[in-house]
Image (cartoon, rainbow, N blue to C red; front, side, top):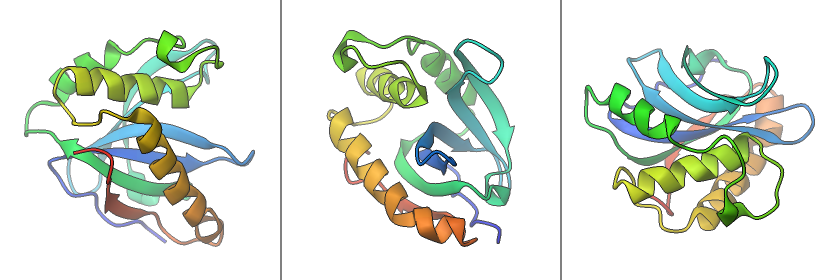
Length: 157
């Protein structure tokens, strides 16, 4: 079942369910009614790298939640991408000795966006907890074919 269109003008966190019980953590920016820009850290081609790709999110069977973090003015996609490319592709000191993953990149990216005034999210730990709780609450429904839900974050604006 296709998911709903993601409203234009917002920057969203999107968590995708994985078979191993974890989530793939991404940021998405709607491009039009059917396509989003997906920003994420990936290691599918060996080694971690930042990637910006178009995605037909509504067709994804694994997207659990799409959570609005803030607003992005029209025409600012390249600027946002440049900011996200600045997020480290290694575990920052703020995350201790944790192994680098897409979740660690997501946390670093939100910190970068917060520091540059692109989103208001002073507590990345609270945001992570909120997103994980929302995604875990949707996992069974997603496995049964339900679409993702869209909501606003209580930890970011």
